[in-house]
Image (cartoon, rainbow, N blue to C red; front, side, top):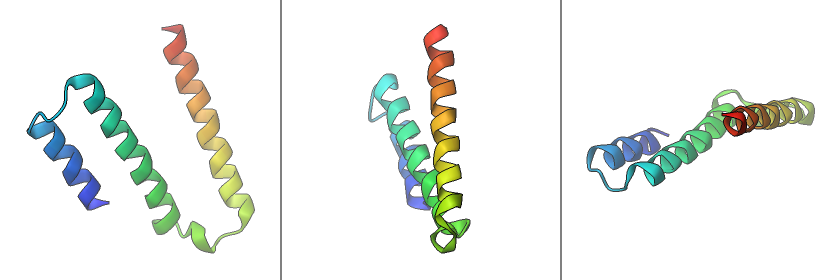
Length: 73
């Protein structure tokens, strides 16, 4: 996860991409990193399926809300 953070900083600092793809790249890295942190550090690998299901539906609802707000603007 630290490597992913360093990759994001290097991509911005060295101006490897134009701003549009760079933002998409950073958002993808952030989503992957958030999933890894929830899975590893919150010990979801040892929890029941219902906990993972609640997190999945929460993330899906968050995505729908963000997409809806973006679409309205």
